[in-house]
Length: 311
Image 1 (tube, one colour):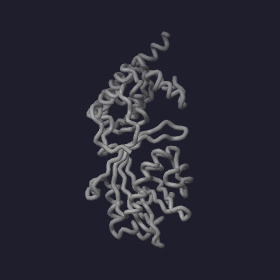
Image 2 (cartoon, rainbow, N blue to C red):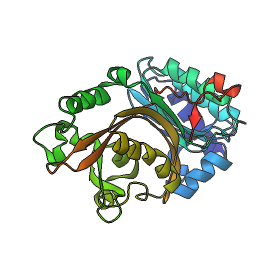
Image 3 (spheres, rainbow, N blue to C red):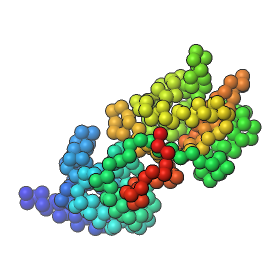
Image 4 (cartoon, rainbow, N blue to C red):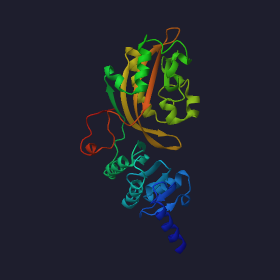
């Protein structure tokens, strides 16, 4: 016990240094423990977060990552983690990665913003998450306010409403790395994946190995969460039928094989293009980001959460 206490005091003293680097687990009594004391496997980490009420901290010189389960973390572990953040340089980039029905990730540019956000999240400790997907359709005339990725994609499409460019894979040109495209299957006219960009939102979520095997699959039967796919694919059929582009914001939980579920927030542009033979191609560009028209875990949601269309 004596040597363990000595080691604990040494770590605590070291933490006062705003430039200290390292990895720690903060236990339910607020004590910083050596990171190696918990095996780095999925089951052990689940136990630490959800049953032992612990917080994980990974500190680099100019960045900090904090992980915890909103419903399970003890007050003392959260307070100690917040104290650690308060000792870091104000310019330090903080990544908050927290579980609330699923894992969510938020990046804040200053530790003061992170401290305020952690305080706000604590109010949701006993709140049951709304697990259905939310979608907010945005006015097309405001597409230029949807961020550079969607803005530039729309402008390229709008040049002739046929090809993004005359050169490039699948006629997507500069947007090809960020795009998904779908074509109709001859046997039943169902939409199947025709192209999956290496930097597309789907590749970011499911990984490159998924992207390599999903081409040719039905757009709503390509990954484990069929329920989520069915809902987001409706817009592809709408655009195919009407020919009119759609801009929307989506936030929902995606379930994954062999991994915990994740919250996925993104802005999306869906347009209709055509290949060289004139056959219709539906293209989707997604920008994964937190700043949506659909708020997430804000104080106002504790009292009212009915103004967005859930699908």
